[in-house]
Image (tube, rainbow, N blue to C red; front, side, top):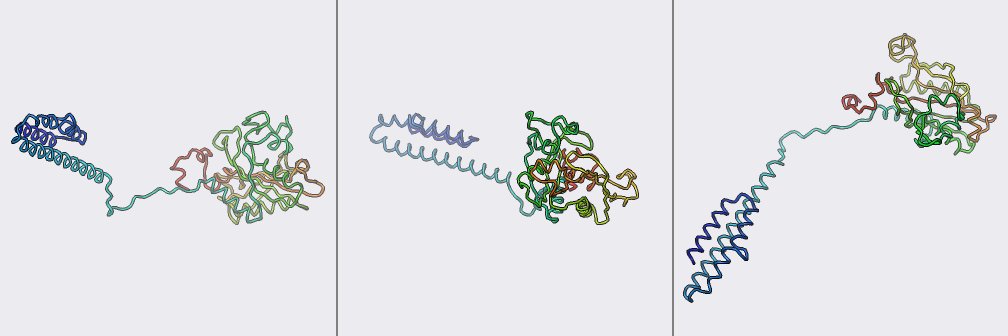
Length: 340
């Protein structure tokens, strides 16, 4: 029996040495040292031995168990060490190498222009206000002197959610809401930037775009106040040498109304490709607040007057940064955005 025990020990040690995984080692442990293992089975024959043979066999049995157990533990320790070394080698950091560079983002050109517009108007005492992008038909149209079936709606009837709610087509509803909240109090001096939506999609129009609209209401407000403010804005946005001109136009919510042009900042008014050889570039629309709009918002047009203006953020960004296709502002192409 001792010879059989020695053979089992040698066999177990050989299998342990050849094992390639901890799972194999555990299987070997069970096969030889488990409750039904080979070493356990052979120990059951100890009862048939003589009193002289039992001590010798018991000593050999313990030595075999200890040898197999030590070999198993050593093999497991070695395999774990090898696995750890491999992991550390794969994840190793060479502190002598230069550090990895990280790409830093920058403000989108639209965000840059919005922030600049806010700063310019806040420096003139304007308050920045915002409103909902899902707007009611009343605030988007009717409160701005655009009753149902008004032909001027045709250019703006766009993304309706219900017959009485839609994605706002301009930020002018914020002006109507502000006047309503003020309940006839003056002065009112606000700038309203935000996202708007219309059914347009080409090189110079997008179904989603941005506007910043301004409103001033007080006693004795005139077109001269509007022109002075617009000149200040144009010079701070495009340069101190800029001049402006006002051309008669039509907007349902202002009367009189005017398109605003600035002298071309590329050619200085001499005529070039950007200004189409006119020397002037259109940048926004403006006018005196229509008396009907004042009345609907709780103001007495006999006592107060006001002016309003609307700036297309994308148009300013395209002019300021020389962008010839509005779609580049929304495609999120890193090659384009990295320029800013």
